[in-house]
Amino acid sequence: MSLGSKLKELRTSHKMTLQEMADALNKQNKNSNFNKGRLSKWEHNTDEPRLSSLKQVADLFNVSIDYFFDKDDNTNENNEVAQTVAAHIDDDTPEEERQQIINFIENLKKARK
Image (cartoon, rainbow, N blue to C red; front, side):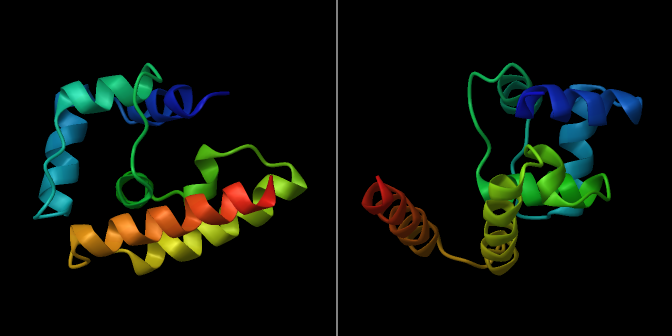
């Protein structure tokens, strides 16, 4: 099941509209700017959420961030790393630092290939 399908499944199982989900996320995370358009793109897999945003969604629905990923052994290991990284990126982390973290991870992935 795709990330978007899992997001939609979570939202609909909680009987929320896209707007209600965006409002709940913004209320939970004061400095966030979620909107139904962005959430719709995620659900339709036309855009991907940042890891920090995905963590906020996971927190809203009381699920682990690895809920959104496949559960094979290799993916579980990667998800644990992703969850650890996401836990250290919070709303106080400046955008420049977030981008450096993302660049670092992308460089590690390129080096593996």
